[in-house]
Length: 360
Image (cartoon, rainbow, N blue to C red; front, side, top):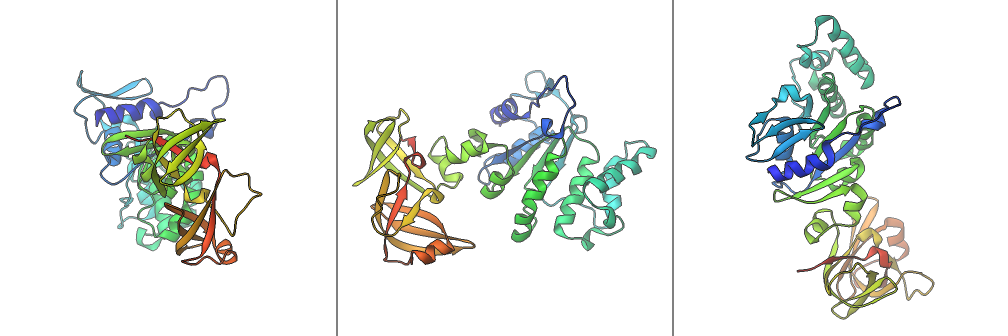
């Protein structure tokens, strides 16, 4: 765990230093998502950063401060780290009003400063009309705002969120993603969030740390990690639907020809050995009727439709083109193409969408 925490701290916890101008909220804001399967170490890292757990070795630093050092025995208590921690169940007090919940963590603040601080949080989170209500009298989205207001009333230097949308039903989660991002952006502090939901990670994160079996498998900007996974394990956890074993048989003009059984694909050459994993995202697969000749895409694969499964506004289509390939199309496209099991179709994939990873 210590190596995992140290790697995370080195890359993401240290905030930017800004000199010579007024500090803006966006200057200090960054949202890092710890992403991966259950049991991968995400919540353990969060608890170690909060000071609720101590690693057996290594160090944890925040800027120039050492919060933990196993060698010297240094340990800064959770209270002195200035961290705000929000659990997935919000831990609100049902017997207290909204106002009392927000004010609960301000006991160390002088009495004459508490009411102005609470009023500031009410205005920021638009809670003015809810002050006297009990927690069970407000909606799930309002409860989330109350929980954030209570944590932020103490003005933490680092905010830790443990699955902050998990307690909400799916429609409300989808509605609140954008709102949560904007709320957090206004705080002018770094945020670390745990989630196992790919959609949340993509929608909310600036940076992603992929944790699997207690190891950092990949870390970087959210688009880089989800579009260009570092290995097969990361590819599967970031949701790449089609992963096949292939052999590079030729490279030409910056492209690599890869054979998957009897099917040949062209992808971007990446200086790899011959044995590779071929990764293709479903949204990068275009389905067309007949043989297309006007497209600039390198790969045109005759295919047979195996299944057509509606998923909200989209339709997931599984085809056999010599290997199983998944495509995501709109409902309108599925209707216009008359997609149904047994139909013949052409799968079109551009070479840059064929991501190659070393195998073995």
